[in-house]
Length: 309
Ligand SMILES: Nc1nc2c([nH]c(=O)n2[C@@H]2O[C@H](COP(=O)(O)OP(=O)(O)OP(=O)(O)O)[C@@H](O)[C@H]2O)c(=O)[nH]1
Ligand SMILES: [Mg+2]
Image (tube, rainbow, N blue to C red; front, side, top):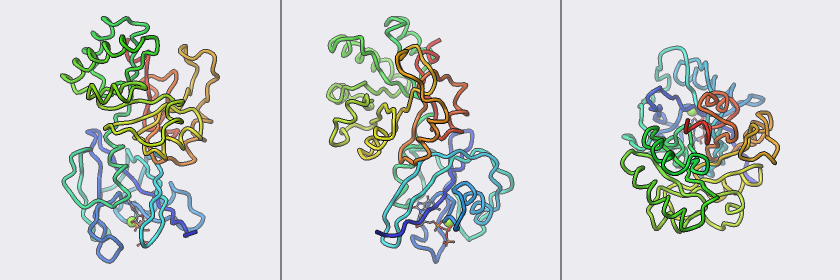
């Protein structure tokens, strides 16, 4: 087996959602390619320590707030790398090119520099995901109130999960929700309905764990995510190349009174295994929990009840 090179890289984020790429200096493998600043762990170093050291060395900034995000493994001709990406939201000092590299702030989905390092494709996709994933709640609100709140709140991502409805009822609801969503930039993921999502040209599908485990390959839809509860399900979602996972439930929630909560310690221990896809904390979450969830390695929070009040 090839030796694995451990790398820590930082995604510097600004409040407007833009992130920083740097060009690889002349003389290194893939010179001129764009990457996230960072570099190899020295022996005995942790990922976060390496990240802080590399960003001082390469660009003269001191990281003051960073949370673990995703872990991507990739085989290059010259090396097998395991890249631990951090979201860096605060730093001190002026960004300065210490190695003759160039820097460019970029918006998710609108890159104006190229080429990007081959391992970084999924990372750029993940950056287009909002830090809140919203789950519908027609079951409790009724359809009229739900549709009114959907127009009012305009969530950027919506999972339409209504297991109490039969197929015909769900299809009717999906058509009405999509009609609203298209006018207001809400992306809609249908729940456990790959064929329907394709027929209605929805933005994607969200799979419950049992469907995730039964799938052999990623459905051909733009966005595909899944609900997970443990390492085996996270591994299945990773292997299929899904775009995100929900992991929970983290705290007790009225929707699953019979299942015991993971708690934050188990949640972060599961995420510390290192997954190549962004993971949302699910179960008893509200927007106030975003920072806490990110400190525990999440991309953000998945919210049901609290999203519609
Ligand atoms: N820094 C960084 N490295 C990446 C990214 N994506 C990616 O595949 N890599 C790979 O990770 C490996 C290590 O990165 P590096 O060349 O920055 O390491 P370093 O700063 O310690 O460089 P040095 O060994 O010349 O001092 C390279 O094989 C590089 O191709 C990325 O986004 N950022
Ligand atoms: Mg480097």
